[in-house]
Length: 397
Ligand SMILES: *Cc1c(COP(=O)(O)O)cnc(C)c1O
Image 1: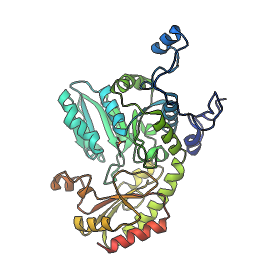
Image 2 (image 1 turned 90 degrees about the vertical axis):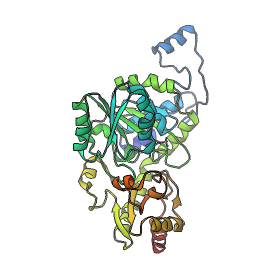
Image 3 (image 1 turned 90 degrees about the horizontal axis):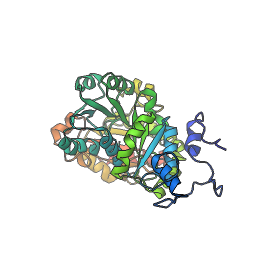
Image 4 (image 1 turned 60 degrees about the horizontal axis):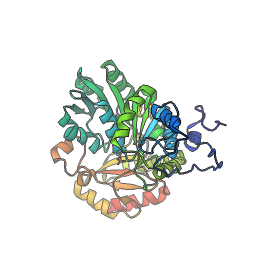
């Protein structure tokens, strides 16, 4: 009966069906929530087989759960991988990968503008265990090449990166990592599998904060690690089980429900974003807009090569700096002043005054985060309503 989980289906079909057959017991169409911590064995022999991995029966929810497995198979299908490990949060996914693959003396090269905690946990914590690191502007492959060392185990990148929407060449990074005996890990949160599949460009592991686009409704935190081959999956699995950042089955069910509309949500939000980016670029109070759908984006061509669309995140600089930024954010009515992204509702924030406020100003400016930089995660509202709100707020600054 395994007809709905074929690998040759399109991305909208996969989002709705991959990993999910009607429940074998009741034929329920919506996946059951297996809200259980433990699973019974038929007899001691069955139990032994499960522990040896010779039966694919379930043992205990920290190690695996049928509802969670449906989600893992679903996201793995969307990313064209061989399997996934679902985690309680995006950070649990990142930390499980680090924990599984680092050994004392290893070195990691990463995007300088990585999601803050993904970088900070290396600098603050993994450094205590003898892990070296170089965080560089990976949008220039020369920086990546120069940062690689004989002991580099991992190249960990994000494209586009936050909040400047700078892209990194995925295929270029895969080549550099593999020439140097390292693996390429890509945090694909900002694009989601609807718009970018890093395995197509040679990545080895994909990380998702499913808190963002995959769940898409701003009501769950969740993460996923996806693998290109079974060997790496087997290598990471024990650390994932020991670290304990496992997803709860109810959480898995909510994310499965969110993913069914992934493509619909992103197509709609992206169309809104294209229109809003155009309006902002023409606005007299706006200094510059960072959006890969605009020809003015320095990596417009790279975006066309590795992304199926420009995405739903826009950053722009207000001419009036931090003060104008604060006035602007205090004036929006429909857009919500909040961190996070990728939901159906439009969220807006001021990196210099919020997420990146603790970084010294010089360092922040050097990283391209100007005082008046505003980041918008465009949602699925009516574009006329969003435009009217942004325009009236721009009048105030
Ligand atoms: C939010 C985010 C994370 C962390 O995910 P959590 O679910 O908050 O733990 C990692 N990477 C990126 C790009 C993110 O936006």
